[in-house]
Length: 557
Image 1 (tube, rainbow, N blue to C red):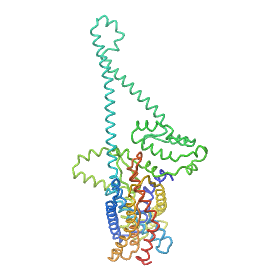
Image 2: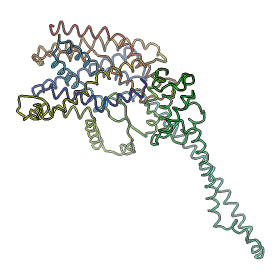
Image 3: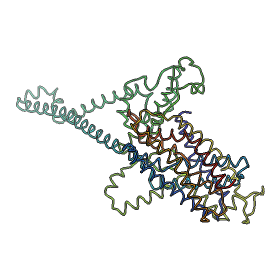
Image 4: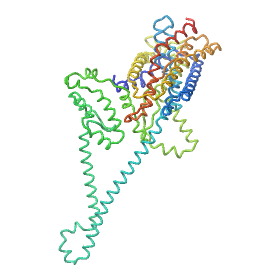
C-alpha cells in the first residue's frame, strides 16, 4: 500500500468506521449501572499517562537523551497504542468461546473505547499533542526569520529598481520641457507633430506603459514557467485531474513527471508559494515509486504496475504529512483530531489577536477550543452512545431491554437497523487498524543514530513493556481488593492489558507533520523510529506473558 492509500484508509476509519464501532459496542453492552466503571477507567487512564510521563522525565535526565527530542520523549511516555491491540485480543479470546463469551468480548471492547476517550481528552482536548511541536520550535523560528529577511531585501531591491527607472524617465521629461520652454514659439509650432512625446500629461502614460511592459514580461515568464512545470505542481486549490492523467501517461512511458524538468520545481514554487511545495512533495511521493518497469511494459495495467513499484519509506510519509513550510509562515495551525490523522486549518491572523488578549479572554478562548474538540466524529459518537446507554427509554429503541418498547413489524426494536449498520461497518475497524499498524512499522527507517541513544531506547522499552505492566498488575489488584471492580473480571483484564502496550504509531504522523522534508537530518523521526522498532520487536514476548499471567494468576482461569 502506498502512503496515500494508507492515509485514505485512515480517513475512513476516523470518520465512519471507528464511530460506528464505538456506537455499536457502547449502546449494546453498557448499562446505567456501569457508570462507576466509566469513572474507574478514566481514573486508571489518568494514572497510566501520569506514570508514563514520569518515567519519560526520569529517562531524559538519567540517560542524557537528546535535547532536540524532549517533547517527543514525553509523548512516547504518555501515549500507548490504546485501542487496536486490546480489541484484537478481546475479539480473539471471545471468538474461541473458551475464556470469554461473545457478550463479554463486546463489553470489553466498549471498555477499550472508553480508555480511548480518556486518551483523546488528554492528548487533544488538553493540548498535549503540542509536546512534539516543542522539538521543532527553533527550526520554525529560524526559517521564518530567514525567509522574512530575504523577502524584505527582495522587496526593497525591487522597489529601488522600479523607483530608479521611473525617476530617470521623469527627469528626462522635465529636461525636455525645460528645453521646450527656451525655444521660440514658431519652433514649438513647427514641432507640434512630436508634442505627444513631451507634454507633462504624457509622464503618467509613459510610466504606465513601463509598468505594462514589466507586467507583460512577468506574464510571459509565468506563462513559460507554467508550461514547463504544469505537470509538476499546482496550487492546492486548483483542479489536478488533467495533470494526473498526463503524469500517468508520462510514467507509463518511463518518464518521471516530477524530475523530467529541473527548472519546474523552482519556478513553480516561486510563483505559487509554500502551498505548492507541499503538493509537489506529495506528487514526488508517487513519482518516487516509479521504476524502469514502465518502459519495459508500457501497456501493462495500472494495478500490476503498482505492485512492481519501489516500496515507500518514512521519507514518503514525511512528504505526505509535512506542513513545515506552512507552519513556519504561520499560514496554518494543527487542528484538533482524535486519530492518527494529522490535519491543518487556516490561522486567519489569530496570532495578532492573541497578543492583545487579556488573561480572562485567553482562558475563555482556550475553554471554547477545548469544547470544540468534542465535535469530532469519535467524540460525538462516544457522547451520544453513552447518553443512550444511560437512558433506558432511549436504549430500548435500539436493543432489547427490560424497559417496554413497542417493536417493529420484524419483532425487533424500532431502531435496531442502526445497530445492524454500525455493527457491520465497525467490524472493519480492527483489521484495517492492524493493517495500517503493520504498514507504518514496515516504513520506519533510521538514517543516523545519536551517540549513546541506545540507553534511551533500552530504558523506554523496559519502562513501557516491563515496568508499566508490573505497575498495572499491582494497581488493578489493589482496586479489586478495595471492591471497586466488584465481580466484573473483564474490566480488570482490560485494565491490566492497557498497561502493557507499546507506543501508538500515530506519533509517527504527528512527528512527520512538523518535520522539514528538505532537511537532510530527521533526528526526531530517527529517535522515534528506534523506540518503536525496539518495542514492537519484543512485544511478541512481553504482551502474551502479561496476558497469560493475568488470566492464570489474577483471574484464576
